[in-house]
Length: 454
Ligand code: HEM
Image (cartoon, rainbow, N blue to C red; front, side, top):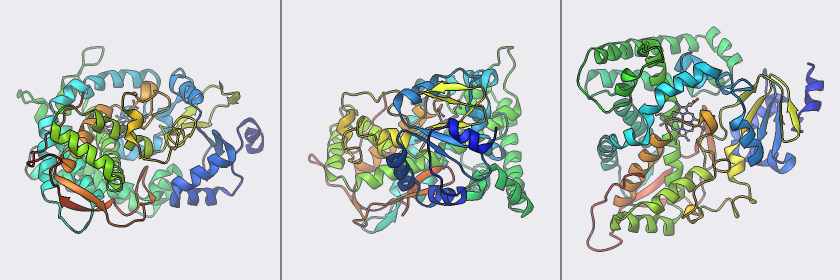
């Protein structure tokens, strides 16, 4: 179908040249999407260079239709193909239909909330080690420190690595692999071909192969070991396909890399936004500190985390779903090839759903569970984030420990803008705050208790 005919079938959208749109979405991501919503409403067609058009949806009824569409109608796996060089073709994120369902079934038990409880001790210990080293009374960028922490948590709690040379080497190699993938060029499949020509793709492949060798050794060693462990790799080694066979090396390697890519920068940026917001919200921080000191439940902490994920979703949309068979949603029939994006950023800032949407107000979620199609920081349906319990638990532990110990103040009156790093939105100045040793909200100073998530 010709592009002009295709456009007639789709909702309206900007007519500015595609490279200009790409530049706007890269340099001013939040502002440019808000501008589009004001102009075009809850369905916006966007055309970027070298790609089929995609449609950004933010009406909860459309989002529900996208999340519940049959697996042969919409393909999220295809929409995430750009991640393949990093996470490998067996990754659950890249699969569709029955291969996806089968792989997801294998992984689900490893990420179950109950299994996550066993990781509380390890996550708390690693957090304490990191948080203890933070400087006081001067501007300090939290984002790099949180990246260090979330990487360590994934390497220890998912890969099951112990302190030593292998952990150090893998940390170094994986940091380099992730740094290369942060480049804007890495998120467009077509530019990956050019980066190959210029050699950066080859450098990336070289470092990735070195990391793969270490991961292969780790998996082989763990396969022959009988010791019971609580990490995610231990669960994956026990998982069995329907025919009784264990997961193959490539599957295990790709799912470990998937957890790293999907769970490291996302959680670090989400926590960074959380602290950037909390530093400007003294009453919220005080109420949280009081709850932590009282040590009776974590209702307000939970509501605060829901509000952080609403106000600053680090992934502005769920995985793009590529239409495989024409589908009617909200009065439009989308043809094959178009991608549909459920926008968390837009639905989270819809004033009809969240009054005064730009205000940071955890009270919205006190006694109110977030809505399945109106609060979607983890996407939804059969593709909902597998690491949601892992991430929520980690956020509770980190925020609980930091606010149990420190008072936060902003380093500048200007709120931080949204900057894009690869696929995530993060605070433009790295969540720079000033930390001070906290006075107790009650007396005497109570040691911070780490709330365990429900
Ligand atoms: C705050 C942190 C996180 C956020 C905001 C987040 C968000 C998301 C989103 C939006 C999706 C796409 C869902 C969809 O398209 O419907 C996703 C998928 C996924 N996430 Fe997360 N995630 C986070 C942390 C994690 C962690 C810690 C892990 C693993 C340790 C993880 C593993 C995954 C996996 C495996 C998928 C693919 C699920 C599938 O395709 O079936 N995520 N995540």
